[in-house]
Length: 436
View 1 (cartoon, one colour):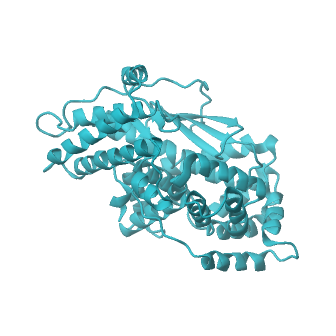
View 2 (view 1 turned 60 degrees about the vertical axis):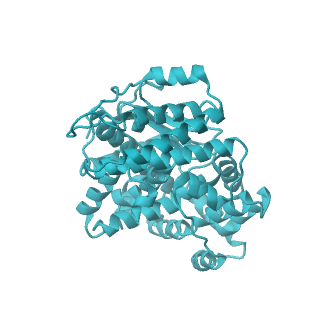
View 3 (view 1 turned 90 degrees about the horizontal axis):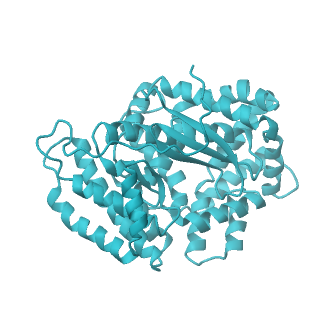
């Protein structure tokens, strides 16, 4: 097995080839090429107003330099999006295959989301639901408190005691923190296994690699900064103690078969092979993020299905972390139940962003219904302040991707088919509304 290389932490400027004038296999010029370039430039232009907006870019450096120099006003960016949206209906392809049709719809919906983000930055306030619909192409279900209460009752029985349940859960989980001096060893072992399993089913370029960096002062727990040329910088936030289950979560979500693989496949199949430049830029507040985050979270169970996760954590990660492997099964049961509370994040964000509760009340909600420790609830509120309705992409996105894969035969008892459908999704411009 190839070891994960330690390349320089400096971001490598990787320029994708210039957009071709024709789609492979098609006759004549690519009618969407001018729209694709203008869309890409609009994303880069909006990034001049929103430091979080451009999550990755590895296209022609001149485009980024020119947009940085021009610093187009928001109104001009919005007008540019409107102009392209008026042009696109006449360019709807009559043939060319499914990917070409998906591409047309992708450009349309991404531009609509860009226009919505321009309006938000210009001062327009949307409800949580309207923002999720405008930016992420998704309808967010409401989850009643009673559903969370059922899970809380099971955890209360599993971890009995006299103290409030949030405190009991926190005290229990603290017994499974990875010691700081063992973190890198544990994380790299998790990445190596996730990569091994992924490469059994997904073909990646021989030069793919990433760098691991440990950081502090962030509102997130992990981040993948894709740099192009099949390389990523993965950062792990060590502000708070990291539990043993997070090693595999982060390894699969940020790396294999998550964000790193998703970006590598898009670059390989859509940018380099087809010459579609719009996929060399990733606007964070867009429908693409629901696919990216949802597939990264579902990818954890694709790579480690059923009891295989428990076996690997018990036999490999627990010993590396200096934890008792005999406790792994019980801890996995607790982790699984806590995972069922993930939609409490959405409800806290919804109520807070819609002005129904204060920031402090939202943090208390997370402690009560998501069993989040106070310091983690504060960190989560920092994330919600910064990224707002983006929280839906993790849980709703995961469930939408799972339904899509399983509806096409990729069920847990058909692992080969599951990988086939899953990797096909990662290589395509499919939208959340196309997961139905």
